[in-house]
Image (cartoon, rainbow, N blue to C red; front, side):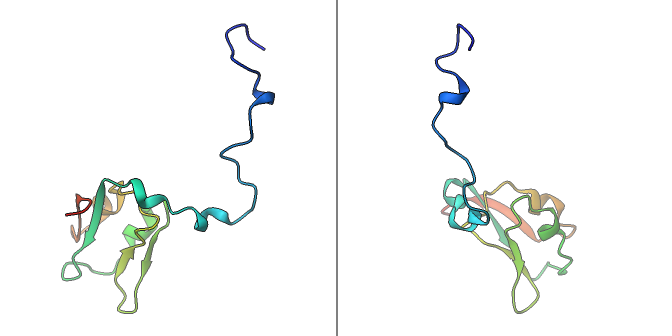
Amino acid sequence: MSKQAIMAWEDLALGAAILKPGNAKELRTGDWRSLRPTVDEEKCIKCALCAMYCPEFCISVNAEGFYHPDFYFCKGCGVCANECPKEAITMGKEGE
């Protein structure tokens, strides 16, 4: 252990570890989002690029074939809006 260290890594409490595979659905991580994507279905061409590029894989297709994010998991990063070729997704402040 380094003289500057508070404790050795071996002595740290277990945290931020995946103890059970497939538990990500239990962690609703969208609560800290500050920007929220809005989909304009009039402009959407159903190309699915938003879903393909979403780093959280939280965008899915609805019954009409349009793609919408699951806000329990969307972090508001804006990748979907950036990749949309028709600018059908806009980012706005959360709560507005």
